[in-house]
Image: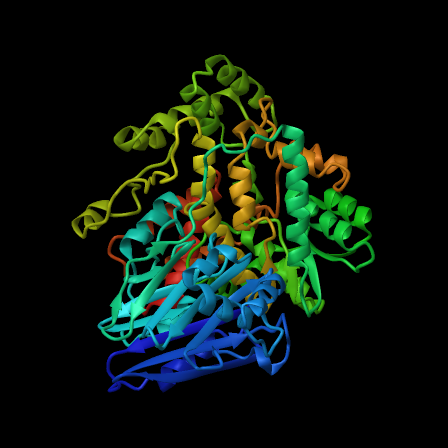
Amino acid sequence: MCGILGFFSVSETHSYSQSIDAAIQTLRHRGPNDFGYEEMSVASNKLVLGHTRLSIIDLSFAGHQPMHSKDQLFSIVFNGEIYNYRELRNELKTLGHVFHSDSDTEVLLAAWIQWGADSLARLRGMFAFAVFDRKANKLSCVRDPFGIKPFYYTREGDNFLFASEMPALKALKQSKAQLNWQRAYDYLVHGDYDSQAATFFEDVLQLMPGHLLHLDLSNGQLSAPQQWWRPQIEQTSTLSFSSAADELRERFLHNIKLHLRSDVPLGAALSGGLDSSAVVCAMRKIEPDAAINTFSYIARDSAVSEESWVDLVNAQVNAKAHKVLVSPQELSNDLDDMIRTQGEPFGSTSIYAQYRVFKLAKDNAITVTLDGQGADELLAGYHGYPGKRIKSMLEQGHYRQAMNFARQWSTWPDRSLKHCFKTVVAECAQGPLYDLLRRGNGMQASPSWIDTQMLRDTGVHIGYPQQKSPYDLPGRKLASELAFSLTHRGLQSLLRHGDRNSMRFSIESRVPFLTSDMADFLLSLPENYLISQSGETKSVFRAAMRGIVPDAILDRRDKIGFSTPEQVWLVQLAEQIRGWLKIDLGLPFLNQPQILEEFEKIISGKAPFSWQVWRWINFTRWYQHNFELR
């Protein structure tokens, strides 16, 4: 796990040496074990590739980057892990490749040399990398299928810059960063972020999951991003439910086995829910005698505490448990660091629990953790996407089954027939009707504390940033939504949270659910294998884990995860929050006195609590850290 950066300059008149040093320093938490950069002449132009290394596989200097092929025709900087590197290395050896290290980086470079972009479909891992082909005079930039590892880039005049994190990119830029007003509005009003290529910084983009782009170094021409992996949502599987569960069990255990490859100590983040519990129990299944360390956030004396479930799993696998409890004052003390760590605003304080879990792992000398992230988006978790599932049945003419499903789904905790009906109506609504329905739920596109007319005048779209899934087939609306959640809105924000929180403490967080072959398998199954006719989420996975995960966990009907008592925390921090919200940001579209007035109503109980409070806090503090105030 590492940090990467680079730039291509068509002119050597500007010296980047100080900028590179500064950018490297912003990434040292991602790679505390080694770092370096190299300048390469390309005709009359200059290419710089930089890297900071967190040593996981082959701890020797042989894994140093930038790494070059023996003939010096290819160079690479790589952030991530290729879990099937041993199998690929054996295959490449038969094709004549000679290896000088045990690193997965050398295997990745050889695979690119052998197969080019066709190598990507062979990889099982998480990755963002840039490879320089001297013969073709081309720089290729690639991101893994789900966007587990970050890749940001921008054009500055004729120059091209990229980095793993925003602070590094800002250090490389000659000009000052500017706020993207559209994304600020989308976040502040609608809570939308990380769902598209545009970021909170004007003209800075993220390379979307499963995409690559090429930079022609002879003329500086940048290609449009190309999608190299696309989820397949056709129902191609003919397996029975029990056979599908058996196949899923084997695939999941194989994924866990690959993700346990490490030359440094590893552990697991354990929330007590199905996904993280399955990861921990599968670790024990694969390694019967290995020491297992688990790390958990505990909201003790709270309705959202999962401690009893955590204890059950730890007892089942005989793990060494590490727990962290958090107070409002600790959140206050760490808030600015967490906001700087994330680089851009985020949805709620729930990620503070994750932040502290990774700190706990670091304090216990663990360098790699396994995590259950991505299972909800692969297996129709959360509440099971009822609107999508019902629409699939309606499109197939299964009207009676749709009605029965709605009734049975509604009997589960935290669900209702009214909510089910709303999701179906929302699924069928578009444009102004969709915005009208959102207003009916109290979600306004033009709240009193923001000047939407000013934003309109500058070209900002006012309204919910509704996106339509590009993966759409009749009768496969649930599979379509899951594919969209995996690659656009949903999982992207969660993966960003996990990457930045883990890297803040130089921890490599692995997510064994998220491999392209696993996604293709699950999305090929009948939708009722994922959410059953009775409304059970992750139905086929629960069946697959019988005998591995305790039945009590598999039979749970609620979902909490690393949840935090956000309202309690923020009420206790009200005085400090007032001070933050009073600082004038100098943004003409933001009515901060009105925000303070709305905040007082919420804190006093005169208005209902919502995540809107956190978005005000988060945006205010983030803006102060990243931009000069007037």
